[in-house]
Image (cartoon, rainbow, N blue to C red; front, side, top):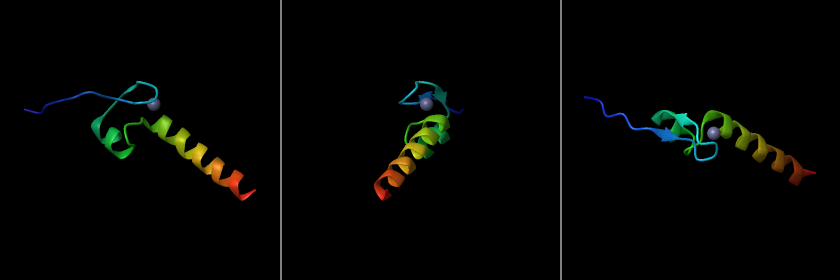
Length: 48
Ligand SMILES: [Zn+2]
């Protein structure tokens, strides 16, 4: 019997599955994507 546990995005609180939680450090893919975008933005700012 499979034990299903619920995981929630630490940023927006949306329900995500365990794989998503593990792969994205507790973030849903949208927040993960936002974070990557923000990180690459700050890299560009530093270069300028
Ligand atoms: Zn989220």
